[in-house]
Image 1 (cartoon, rainbow, N blue to C red):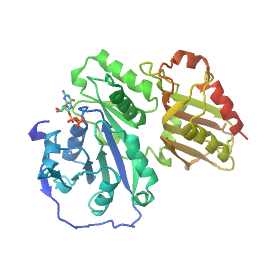
Image 2 (cartoon, helix red, strand yellow):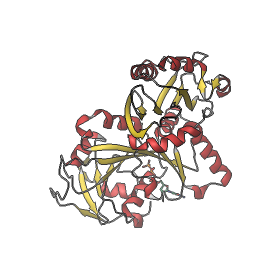
Image 3 (cartoon, rainbow, N blue to C red):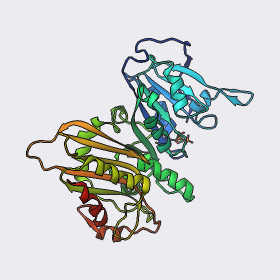
Length: 376
Ligand SMILES: Nc1nc2c(ncn2[C@@H]2O[C@H](COP(=O)(O)OP(=O)(O)OP(=O)(O)O)[C@@H](O)[C@H]2O)c(=O)[nH]1
């Protein structure tokens, strides 16, 4: 990144707290920004930090020192030791360089509550954002101050999802599998045909994700912020997506895919819990050929016995949550339960075509059998 792209940095006044105090009840959204090395995460952050917008955004960078000009400008080194420093930008944003990623940084940031109303957290290019996302779900103290709004993953259009090293490949795949929004960046470097291929690869991993295509990470911020991807507010938009969802083809024959389930009727809550726990914890929900799935992300809308409103199901790795939405089932409405699993077959040589043959309305027969007892 060129130096002129770097925002002006101004030291922050220590201890100044303006409006909302801790305990004021207003929770701050956190967006996790992830993406493979060099995809354009920092370019995206710089864009957000320099754009004029109505939000006061605090940015947490957990990788710095060797990357872009912004990262370098935040990497304050004393005798080789990096320490935390807060900087306020001219457009009201805050920046923080941190040694420890995630919860610690956010706890420290909350000391400065009142100076910002949104948090962006950039993970390192090789990080599994699921680990960071999970922290927000399990940390109940943080939960009263902040909430996870969404996971945004930046993909390099030029390199797509091609990485030869298996470890790097699976990290990249997880970043795509977990994302609520994918920004395919650097479209200036590829032809229309190449871009199509990248788009298809992304879609084959994550059938639910919204995809934006851009250059220099320039995106309409209303598409990036306030996604409410992890709470019941996303129920309405999720319903539309789920209705049109199909099981996807496995990505690069590595068994990475989106699987959809659709079952009619009311579900007993305890049976649903059991099903999800078998799926996420015991990992013993199998398709007809005995293959299990390592689920990275789970989403769904279901009808629970005794509940008048639709219930949203959210899962990241082994954590999951059921929350009643504001959408009531109508009297004459057919109650359809829809679940989407994004993950990886436990057999690497997994072939989509054999799986597809065994699917009925996007639902593997075996899994359908497992789901049917849920209906009371
Ligand atoms: N041609 C082109 N270059 C871009 C675009 N977006 C970013 N770059 C360049 O790509 C390089 C990497 O961008 P960064 O924003 O630093 O990527 P990153 O994901 O933060 O990289 P790491 O921190 O190393 O993981 C920089 O030199 C950018 O200037 C784009 O749309 N087109």
